Image 1 (cartoon, rainbow, N blue to C red):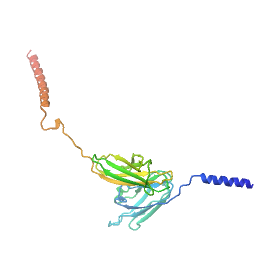
Image 2 (image 1 turned 60 degrees about the horizontal axis):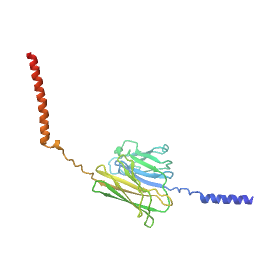
Image 3 (image 1 turned 120 degrees about the vertical axis):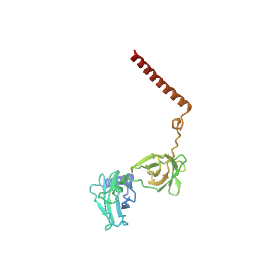
Image 4 (image 1 turned 135 degrees about the vertical axis):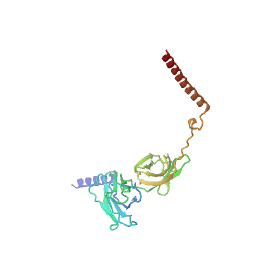
Length: 281
């Protein structure tokens, strides 16, 4: 019996030693201002959270400057949110809280469900539920956006470990926030020996570009992320008018046009002459 207990204890110790550590649950707490200009004063507000960890959203009323009350009923919609309450923020109730644990990755909608001033700005909020981020040794990622002469934007990325040690041969993802509120993957560069990477981003017109760069982490390194914005004027369109757009036609074109018109009128005159002869006959 003693031998069996000893063997069982040894087996349990070996299993515990080689079992991968469980992810430590951590709270995700956010304060979100709600007003007629949108969540946090933007109509396309997006919040990134991790699946499997508790999320607490504290909504605060942001329309105190109005003469009349402008209440907002906030609802989170999407898979797994059917049992979540609808909360109200108003002049008399300036704060409200929703706490839940998103189970799956994906996108949840955040919106006001009652008519209110600025309601059109409160229907595009999103909660992007991502897979749990890697934990481990702290990492730092920096992002610098620089406009180029050709109208594009150069994104410079630097990835370092704690103590400013560069991290080489690490994949980094660069995202562009689209006008529809989604994220478009622009590139997945790998850092060089000095921990840097660069991505050239083409622009399609004037406006503000919102860029996110992140390091997934893993192998004992923690997740890292950096965001940046840059205003781009858009490339000027240079139009060179062709020959047909000039005030006067080129000589060769004018001569060709006269030849064509002359042939048409000569043909018309010949046909008219033949018809006259037929009638006289």
